[in-house]
Image 1 (spheres, helix red, strand yellow):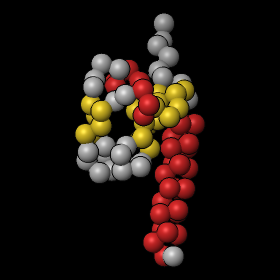
Image 2 (tube, one colour; image 1 turned 180 degrees about the vertical axis):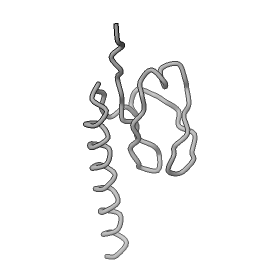
Image 3 (cartoon, rainbow, N blue to C red; image 1 turned 90 degrees about the horizontal axis):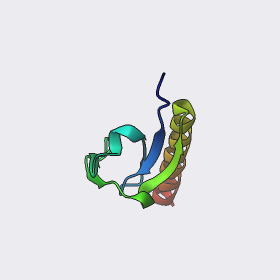
Length: 78
């Protein structure tokens, strides 16, 4: 019987959204952010979304990161 993987989106302090497999973070207290290198303390408030569809979560995280970056650039230009 195949195990149904669950994935989740976690937000870093730098503002980026990262997709992790839930079974890989379940037993850990910390992970490293691939964008800024900070050590993330995994707590319940950091989990933004959870689903078994990896492509859907990657699209959501990509869209959230794109919006954040566009807003940041707009504020710098202004």
